[in-house]
Amino acid sequence: MTLDRFRPAVGGVLDPSVRLARRLGLTPNAVSVVAFGMAVAAAAAFVAAPRTGPRVLYLAGAAGVVLNGWLDLVDGELARETDSGGPAGDLLDHVLDRYADIVLIAGLAAGVERYALGLAAVTGVLMTSYLGTQAQAVGLDRVYGGFVGRADRHALVVAAAIAAAFLARTVAGLGAVGWLLVFFAVVGHFTAVQRFYYAYRAL
Image (cartoon, rainbow, N blue to C red; front, side, top):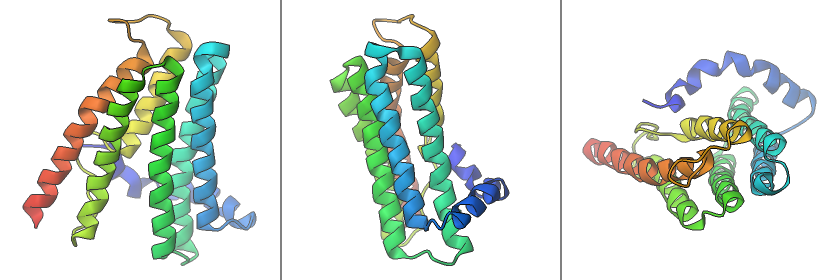
């Protein structure tokens, strides 16, 4: 079970944000770009946090992740309400989501200088997302199942950033961010295998 399965339930909560986007004249594609900008800003905060002020920057990074996830929901709802969705917008949204995943994990890894863990984590995350969308490419519905989805990853990044802001304790030489990278590396690939299994059986 993942948080992604609750996406349809938040439609009504998104209404104020969607109305604001419409009043500002934003298109769904513009909202997607702004969402990606939030991810880049969060990643920059994560890189700088351990060196220049961990508490405020980790909290700022957590806020950026929340905004990225929220706007990622808003762009889809805005496209539905304005009947402006299409293959080009869907492609842009997926590409920016993947780049957001990359920059967030790279920012976390660079901040704590755990580059090998970062590589293992980002490949796990990308394979999870790839298997979700590849199911669509072979004629199935998009697969959101598995142990950890994108919404879960966002929640975990926010939790780890908050923990890193207030807790300096390490376990086996790793702090909250380091252990998050380990988790993504292991569970990301496990989730990818789960999604492959579900999709393969459905074909």
